[in-house]
Length: 70
Image 1: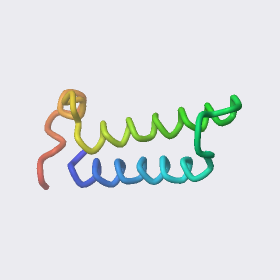
Image 2: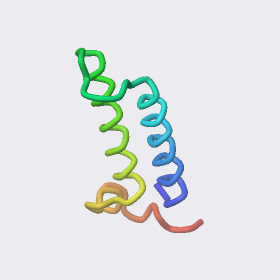
Image 3: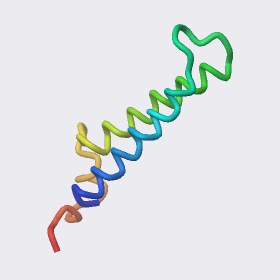
């Protein structure tokens, strides 16, 4: 996946995290449903970081040569 594609996917994950965060109430989660929503927000932010910054070089190892310009 090229860098533009990773940027788009990362921004989509940030959007998912934002939409889910709007459904959360402030404070600690009081029900299982709130805890799952918080987990989804954290997971979406984690995936956004992986796509935007590629901290462990995952994209280079899994798809070598795909970052070349056509």
